[in-house]
Image 1 (spheres, rainbow, N blue to C red):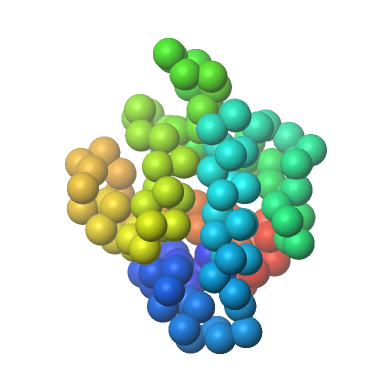
Image 2: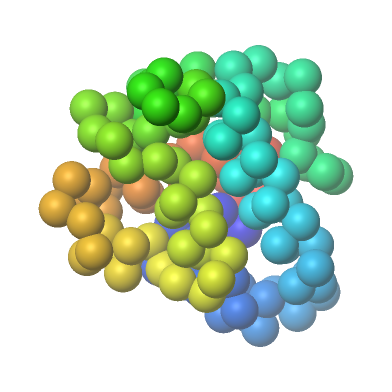
Length: 124
């Protein structure tokens, strides 16, 4: 799933292409990831439903900030929250139009993040 989203698909395009997947299941996974990112989860104590655990510390392109927020994950060297990207995807956006709205985030960074997730959650 994340490899396809990383290539520019929307959630709906992904579901239409791979019809055996329910929209509710995809949004459940995205909501869980958003919750982990907002909480600053740093260990795999909270696995993604039906998939597995993500140790966000293993991705070198993101970091936790603790500035007026409670330890949220951001793109390294920015204030751009990773959870915002996944909210954008859950609302039907692509990684490409997310990057177009931000001067700080490059497409390669979001693609690397999706590849990271695809590998960790065995969804390639």
